[in-house]
Image 1 (cartoon, helix red, strand yellow):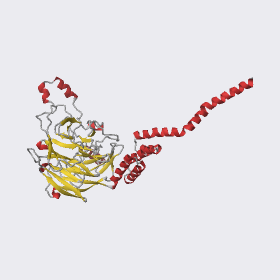
Image 2 (cartoon, rainbow, N blue to C red; image 1 turned 45 degrees about the horizontal axis):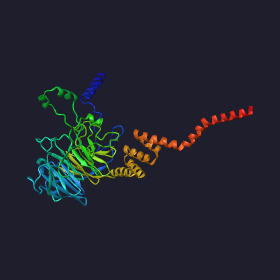
Image 3 (cartoon, rainbow, N blue to C red; image 1 turned 90 degrees about the vertical axis):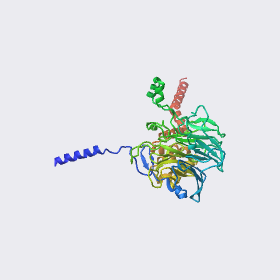
Length: 492
């Protein structure tokens, strides 16, 4: 019997050694979640739900082929069907998505009037088109009738290698007609053009990253040796979008994973007109997507954002190609929720390439399953939106009421507690605000509320403070002085 026990213990030990325990960073499997103060996944009600999938086959034009970019303007969706060299225009009417037209060529004086590998499209408020006609190495500007206005080509500038290829991949255009283009292998930032089509420079150059050992070696290497070494160049962006105020939101997925935790990677950025990153990062964790990078179903590593879209309420959403997830952030950089996964069901992705929004709906272009998935807000998601919007409008009571409703559906939602605390703080109810901030370990806001509460308490009690001070310090001295006078009078 004793021998059997020993053998059983040895067998268990061998099993443990052969099949090690799952790492602490393993993935949870629920669809929608957020992170708490401790950085742990918290399951959440769905803020968005997938309700339809748009394919070329359903539209009656045959499957899309490797679609790389799309754009939404009002109720129209413009798809760059890259592999089929065409632009597909889809119209939403009465809740149904229908084919409006297919564009394979345009008119105007140019050598080539057809598209070759178009990767992105931007439609202005005037209905004009800017299309990255990538394989033809140009961005074509067309009017509302699909007639050529001008071409944006490789800049004839000394800062640009005239022997290099010009492969535009993404484009945005502001209301003044300034075009900002992401060009493959251009490492000085985005290429900027004036409304005349004239090159005006680069914007938003990424920080140069290099290895110190290589740098020292280059200082002593011969010319031939230096030519064989990797050149120190800034990392590249992979997408960009304009918000309602015409700031540029952009994403990059070229970084070292350790740079994410200390927020040096900055995978999401918001650029002003000077190209300076002004994205607010006041959340408990920086906007980097997943905090847990464990291996699940053969997928590991940090989130790699491939596109971003900014909503009218100053929230923004990014899509991660690593695990096929969408992350939503508020204007302070707090994670609202994350949802999605890799797979072949509705609401899951194969190889997402672009993200857009139509009103509050989110649309994801997937080149892997050649479709567009449409997500609509749930009641829970709408409550969060309403709470954020009312807070920005200054309606703090209303905002707090919405957060209270959120808590009835998700008692683990940290941002609701903090949102109520911020509303109370704005209303001057500092003591109550402190209670909510303390619940969710929000030290910064708790400290702010405490300072204001202390000031408020002193202002309310100043009369009592002066009275007590007078009683303790001044009154004894005054009594002593009176007694002294009385004694002197009596002695006379």
